[in-house]
Length: 274
Length: 311
Image 1 (cartoon, rainbow over the protein chains, first blue to last red):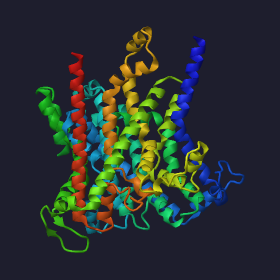
Image 2 (tube, chains in turn yellow, brown; image 1 turned 30 degrees about the horizontal axis):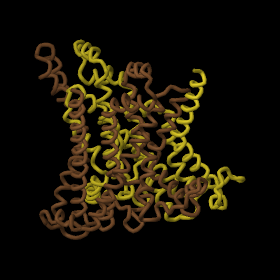
Image 3 (cartoon, rainbow over the protein chains, first blue to last red; image 1 turned 90 degrees about the vertical axis):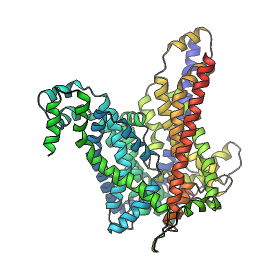
Image 4 (cartoon, rainbow over the protein chains, first blue to last red; image 1 turned 45 degrees about the vertical axis):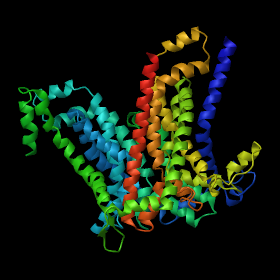
């Protein structure tokens, strides 16, 4: 019996290793590529841990004059798109949950199904007509396509589970709907707010398709900037991998730190942007 | 005005039947989002349909052409080919993550130290920036310097051309897609596993059932609804997959990995043929809805046969 238990334990950890290793090995290899000189990246058989670390790959990427611009662009676009989505999406989620207007979720579903490129054609024309191309405004607006449905969807789910008794008591005491929302419903829904915020940030930060069409030289976000590096630096893998890791590092960190919230949000709505 | 709409129904609330007077008072919460959704989701859709009925090229005047753009589609070999690529890509990208994701869910359903952290690590591929990930995969696919061919040589397999050969490009891209999205299937199935009671397993164990038998006859039937949901979501995402394919192959070599979404991009934003691009977008959307409907129909039917055989 105890031999069987030990075997079972070994089997479980073997299975865990098999399941987790594709993710771990990939990101370790990504890190390895990013700290190697070209000699090591072109070596056969491949070198995993180099003798000399090429930290200059990171320095080069960070020092390249536009990288900071693109980083700030990403911060502005993701920050604004997430902030605006929270501003309109959280009250909307509350209203929809309280009105039990489940049919309105169909619109969210359509947004979820529609390929991101479909929004781009008409909105591209609209932005051109408004003379907004060349600024960050079009990207902020179009990122709302990703962030608003996520926030509304997750908040509907959260407000549906928060107890009504407190809100009704507050209403009877003469509070307005807005006061009830602000002082009773919102504080209870704080975990939901965190989930909606984190997922909106990640899917906006990662978005690529809107940027390649709408971004000009000065208005690229980081994913677009990294993609554009490919054509220039076909052969220098080190700096490329370093740039890729810098772009995705904040997201990876957030994923591990907030995995509980992320898992809750993803299983609740199974949302994904773009 | 705002105060009135909020206070008036609230005051009437105690006296009148709740449902009727309660509903309008929540409208102010929804209106801002409604405006945004109308502007960025509904308007683009309506405008896309209108554009698809026009000859609409950037820089030249537009003319109404009725259904001409749609009639052009079946006669466009590149479009027809892209539909085939999309179907192959989607079928594989639904099936493989479902298989691996179910296995991973069974593993993560067990209790072991560090489970939360490892689950966080496991879902990193789906959260990581797709373009950054695609870039590293491109390096790994490299026929001479890539680490994948080295790994193949370790187990005695011949080197592959991966994304650089028309015959292997779609399976190679599916490998990336599977690596990326297996975690989502895992999470959904894990939710299903959590809802299964332990009693069936206990009695099966007493009856001497093996691990595989328990999985096949208890777990699998009970998580089938979750597998359907996961399959549906996977289908929707795989059909419109863009970032990975665009960043790794741009639809190449030649047009061997050009899916509908990639072709749509070329038509609209390289050839600037917005009318035709809009027609592709509409047909694409209808196709996704149709696929979802077929899956729903299949689910309904299996549910009925299950009930039928159970009776």
